[in-house]
Length: 91
Image (cartoon, rainbow, N blue to C red; front, side):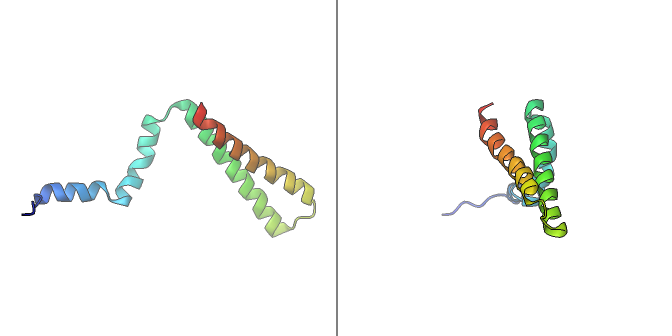
């Protein structure tokens, strides 16, 4: 014989597994549970990602005349994000 769940508990379980519910609760939970040092590192990483995206867009739209400058700036942002992502879990 199979056991059937009550309708109320089935509705609550499907609501908590809803991707929209999870995504809407994510920012509030991040702000409540994440230490301020980790938030600072995350903000720095977002700044680097934004800077790298702007450099890449500029290179695509305006051209890459000083290619060495683009290469140095873009590599610095990507490298810093990579190293920080590698070091951050150990902090």
